[in-house]
Figure 1 (cartoon, rainbow over the protein chains, first blue to last red):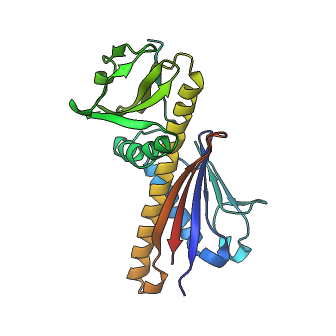
Figure 2 (cartoon, one colour; figure 1 turned 180 degrees about the horizontal axis):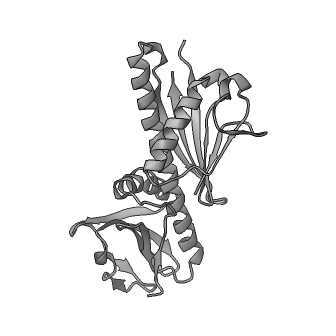
Length: 79
Length: 172
């Protein structure tokens, strides 16, 4: 069954957060997409400065060089 | 020239094509929501509509606009009657041009808005492109059911906080 979910891009004071849905909606695809997006942004001259993950179980984020903190979504910040 | 304000977008490499799309797709939309009206555009000497700025008191000045390769002119009603400002694109960044005498909050708001809009638009485009690349990978692996589609998008700007949000509704 196809689902609908929202990816939110929020900018405050020159910093961007890209908030991906929780795993029940997007699952492992979130990691793949975030890596691709990071590469595209770097090509555009924008570097990721920080990554945060929450609500993703360890087996899903194993091998991904990211820091797990107490936040609701994947969160990126740069600017 | 104290009346001319420059906005620096804090990215290492400014992408002019991206800025052009951002101006059309996001900045114009937000400014329209805020009550500003597009009255003119220019690009490489080709002008559509009105591309003259006005000083406080209604005196026109044009010299600065024509120094820039392209941009959009917006109109608003200020203390001295109808006034306008322009958002120009250069090879290095955006510039906000206008007479903001007595309206410094407007200049600050525009500067922040333009910078944030560029970052938000670049990010949204990266997500959309990223989804397309993921779909390509899924199709190559025969997983057609994994294909995702962006079915809707919206732009929201909170004038009070300056926070800008782009929402992409994805189906998949």
